[in-house]
Image (cartoon, rainbow, N blue to C red; front, side, top):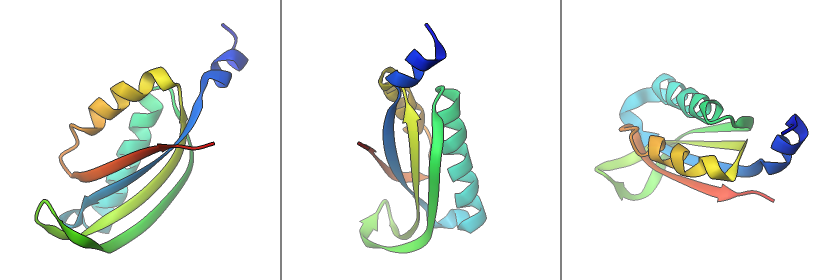
Length: 103
């Protein structure tokens, strides 16, 4: 398999993460870096990152009324997405995440 055929199998995704406010900005940025490292560990490529900072939540989420938001655009082979989600579910400081497909 050539590298161009591997690249053709890559699909573009966007993940929005919501992390606990107790982490502080530095801790939340470190968590963002960990998510990007996780993407890379599944042979993905980070395309863009938009750290949005601390925001008030519309409703309490696991006892939190504020959280840090981060949006990461990345490419990943569709077959790797399940394993990536499994690892994300083990990250205690993530309140929630949402992965969407980009066109």
